Image (cartoon, rainbow, N blue to C red):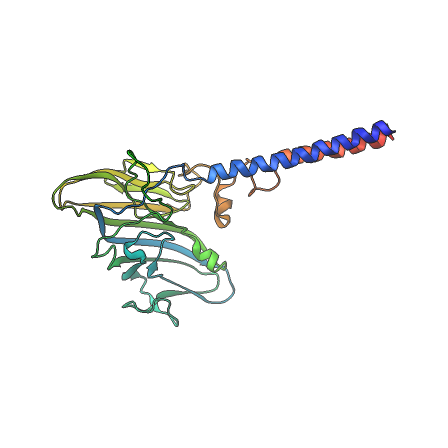
Length: 317
């Protein structure tokens, strides 16, 4: 009987140790998967400035509530990173709307030339709208660029990498997080901008990344064609990137289109599972992680513990 108790205690101890070890390994793997490729960005400015940034967005939204609701266009964008000139936001002008947008009762865009514009959506109604925004001031007529707030000071010598221009990102379905009763069915955005060599006496070379990209979306077109899709900046997102050269004062135009969500018959744009729970149902995975319920190994260990208990009760008591 003492032998049976000793065996049971050992089984329980090894099971608990196994659970702790496996949980720790999951945390390590998760942290590795979420790291942005291991590249180190060095603080600096840019010889190339971006202007004439504009976007045309087409969305389809459903009101799932039993009463009327409204949604509107945001006219500011901070991007979540430093690096705009003087760390300011991008402010937008609403060029056109279809159908015609209405003026909203409240305003979040104080100081901008336009009132908040948006649309009414009836209970159960599905509404499609399209609108065009153009940057004013920074990224509009004033050249600017996106910087990485995690960049480190240049204390390295004599060689450092040049990563090119950084990028910023947002979640297309943020409206569902702000109001879960509004269901975003589809989102499509076509961006355009001009990159210009600000150095008057020499040609410059490097990587131009799309200044703003939606996460968890598919890059469906670009002009010129992208040189590569950068998967290391933000998890699960492919960022349009061009390898380009600019003569003094030389402007180059770029256009790129993203669509959300990624359709079932399309290859995912990134690797791994979706980080954002609102759209996680569109990207389910059979690989258990901390976001997809109990890991299989923990279930196996639970079975071992239960089996050991039953064995002890039946044969060793």
